[in-house]
Image (cartoon, rainbow, N blue to C red; front, side, top):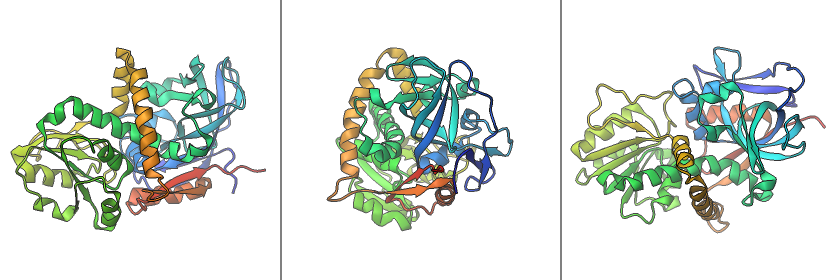
Amino acid sequence: MSDANHRLMTRKADLGDTLRAAIPAGEALAEGEVLLALDRFSLTTNNITYAAYGDAIGYWKVFPTGEPDYGLMPVWGFADVTASRAGGVTEGARVFGYFPMADTLRVQADKVSRGGFADASPWRKAVPDIYNRYVLCAADRHYDPALENSEAIFRPLFVTSYTAVDFLRDAAFFGAKRIVVSSASSKTAYGAAWCLEQDDLEVVALTGARNRAFVEGLGCYDAVLDYDALETTAADVPTLYLDLAGDAALRRRVHAHFGDQLVYDCLVGSTQSDGFTADDPGLVGPRPIFFFAATCLDQHRERGTLHAFYERFLTDQKTFFRRVIDPASPWIRIVEHSGLGAAATVVRALADGVSDPAEGAIVRIVREG
């Protein structure tokens, strides 16, 4: 079935429940507007996190649906400019950026430069500027058409891994000698573990029994524990909790077990919950602090250090890419899915926590002809 003029909306009350619907007809492009046709995008637990915090942080506002019970789950991917009334943005240009799961997206091009442009639509102000930038691939010296799938999957995830570790490293890990990582099979989690390999810290993975073999096979954690075995870990050294699961019950167990030895709780994602629950009156120890990578990037921009950060990040990202797709022992296999109908199946599996951690899901938009 063709995806032309359609979008895939997510029911806010059940993040795995999606509705394929027509895109409302719009008027002709106004001055400064650009029409982008989405070609391919990735789907990971990161997208479930966007939806889980859709109201708390503003992700649901980025791509308004006009339907109060439904939102457009944001995704990262590649698109082509099919029409443009913005100077400096030419038809046929390829871009990387933040999209709804939809055939097309109309944007108000602003801050146009040789490297890209931003969407200045008023609803995009709900999130930091980094989410509103579109990179022109022809001007990106790191762009490789053969690596588009890897880029779509890992670029938005690894920047979170990388900035989180940089933040913690700058804070001397709050005095911790051990980092406990939940949802250790997630790509953001093992990206962070890879970044920590040169630090003098014990990195302990927490994962479900179903994913334990996969996590052990990564080789980037010092120890791998099932969630049920958390309390077998000695609570004898200062410990930092890097929370990718966002599970309130697990958080209470972590805090209760490590007690005074828990020095910091860094909430990065939410692969297992449907909201931000840091204000838990029954929680012992430090209050969870939500880590927002985009805020850190905006701070780099304000300080004038964003270019230097990206140069360092992109160099290390290439090394990470080489590791995860190493033909001798790849960490993931990339699987392409065709159409919004297939995307709905992937979203359901991600929301239910039954997706294969060894698979990197890419969805291609299907068009007639």
